[in-house]
Image 1 (tube, one colour):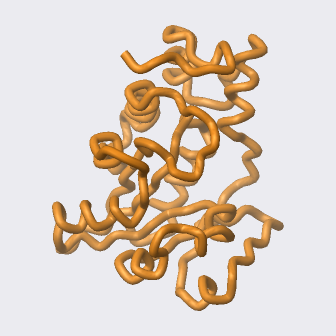
Image 2: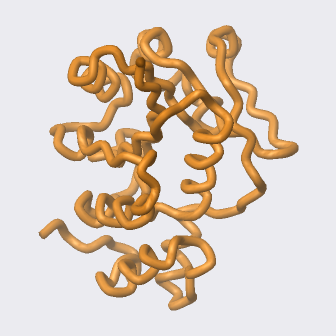
Amino acid sequence: MTLRAGLFGGTFDPVHDAHLALARCALETLPLDQVWWVPAGRPWQKDRVVTPAHHREAMVRLAIAGEPRFVLERCELEREGPSYTLDTVRALQAARPGVAMTLIIGADQYVTLHSWQHWRELLSRVGLAVASRPGVVATPRPEVQRHAHRVVPLPMLEISSTDIRQRVARGQPVDDLVPPQVARYIAREGLYRTAAPPTES
């Protein structure tokens, strides 16, 4: 039987409740057996310094613990250079031939998909699922719209990693925005208390 995996990539700086909601909705609404969480090593589209990879990996591990259908995939953390999704898909397909993969992205990523490296080859290799919130219409370029995609309906959760980092820096609680174990990790490791992230150890 073919394993059906959803690829859910991101910086996860930090991982939060909306990320988990999307992954759970993907399992419920798509024909998937697993969701593979793929933390980015060096996100090529980020114009800021991100928190060291070992912290972001640890937070994802804590967030997905207890759900056996959630799997942490470390390939981008292990690879040198910028994290391009196509490189990740090529590597995963070489390592796991026969797995049917679906790329799970947000509506904002769908709109900018034409700017991704070799996006046409990417969509020839994987299925596509786009998160959709009520009342939010994502309109990508026509050449992207021509590719079939599935919709993952999402509840209205106005949560962003940027807001969480800012709240922590101001000394405000984030317990209602991230899983409890992630909130404890952020506090214990002293993450996001200043503008600059801690250095890699």
